[in-house]
Image (cartoon, rainbow over all chains, first blue to last red; front, side, top):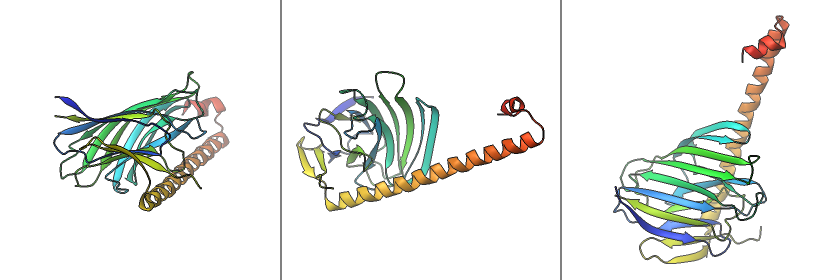
Length: 169
Length: 76
């Protein structure tokens, strides 16, 4: 297995979304890694992903640990991939949230699956969430673009948020 | 809402990066996503409330049968 950097981006200013476009179809899988933080006043906000600007036929299951215990959610008709929770303005300054997504067979003409890991936390155990996810997209189109943004209505991404997309062969 | 929502487009072919406003279609799509999230969240909360109500009802019935709070807790 070899991993090649396709593109990386760091936001120069507050921006709502990151969009990787014109993704080459020459790799077997994709690996996306990010470190982001939201502008909303909340402690953390949902962070979502879509493929090809498409808003249908997503599914998935997530398990997570957080300050309140353990949790899980799942669904079969999402309009987006509920990727993770990310730190927002309610936690100490300059603490970003890391996460990563492995997207299998993104260029194939079959349904797509992806696995993710993420974490959001403050400086103490009073506020944290870390989780794992399995995601599906029942669409036979090759993934040629990826969109990342906070759930609508939950603010933007701060300057300094970064994401990198790798191709796996 | 007067804020202009923007996105940064990273062209993986050319490497060019540009910040542009969201299109009307993207804004509409986000509004639909927000609505579907709110609906799903409401359904989840209703399900949790129903489970909590069923649990409370079951515990009340067990208490009526004579079980102590400790015995009910031992069943959980």
